[in-house]
Length: 277
Image (cartoon, rainbow, N blue to C red; front, side, top):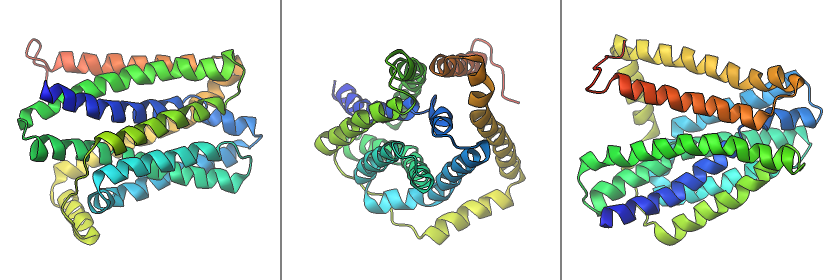
């Protein structure tokens, strides 16, 4: 029961944050198009977001450890809410600033929450470390479910209610606020080891260059991510002229991704024992 309560406290904060993130996926390009920006201008906005996520990702681990994991999760809620509010503006520089905030928020989302959980699980509650994958696998399952549901919800607010492409971003804000409030009220603060940023990056670079397998894996991952980002940018302008419901299409993509993950888990299970190439 104690472990279940601890899990629920984590899921309550983390899943709200994920839901807010997924809601913004289907209508980002459509919103910029709605504001009459050209494809080249929209591409720059996307690049600003991706570059911001990469740059902040380099320092997010050190930042989270120094600032505190709980504070970092609350900071995520604040910065991502500001990012959503910038979508109300038609000013290009404001939208660029919003993309930078979005990159910072993404870096925090994928570092602070899990770091907080692992520390609390092991250090404060002294639960068995082998239970950690159980929590994360369930979080991954619900993440996929939320992604599928978010597409339908975004379509409902933007199209069915006629609120326009900015609506999903506004709906995300209450979810982010709730996530931050729950973290403040129910989470304890914890910190990581204070490591010099130069040592952290230096160690990672040394590992990358000293092991050819790590370098090869990183190269393959980078190429894969490049293709994914190109797809993320192009799917809306390709399908939107044909009248495709963007939210439903997004849900279909996420459902296909969920099926792919399930097939992989089945393939490498004890029953089939297939090995990754």
